[in-house]
Image 1: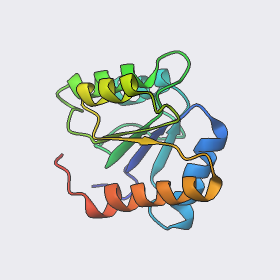
Image 2: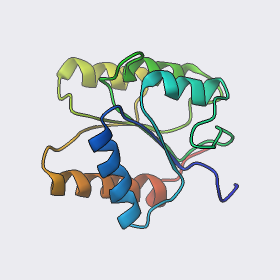
Image 3: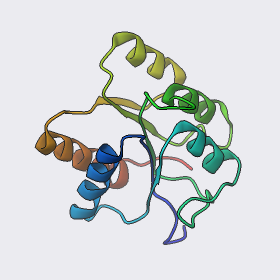
Image 4: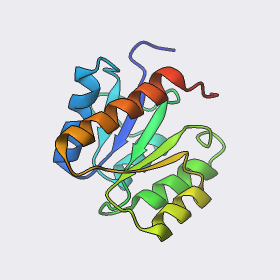
Length: 146
C-alpha cells in the first residue's frame, strides 16, 4: 500500500465535528491519511467517479469510512447503501458516526451493511475519547480484507 494512501474517509457536513475528529486522530498519532468529504455527493463522487479532493483520488481501499447520516444533497444511508452494494467497495468497513439515536436509523443502517453505529457524544471530552477509541480499533486492532 502506498504510504500516501487514504486510511480514513470522513464524510461529515458539520465543520466543527469534522475538525474535532481530525484533531483527535492527529493528537493520538493515529493517521495523517484522512480525507474529509463534506457531504454524501462528494463521497460518491470521490469513491465511485474518480473525483479528486484535497489533491487525492480514491485509489486503494481505506481502512474505514466514518459516515454521518444527516447531510444535505445525498444522506449517509444512501452512501452506505451504494458502498455496501458495489462489489468493489462492499468490504470497506463503514462506521456510522452520527447524532441520530433513533431506532429506525440504527436498524436501517445495520440492514444496509453498516459495520458499527456510534452516536456522537455531545461533550467535547467524550467526543474526542470516542473518536480515539474508534481510530484505535479500526486502524490498529481490526484486520479487514481488501
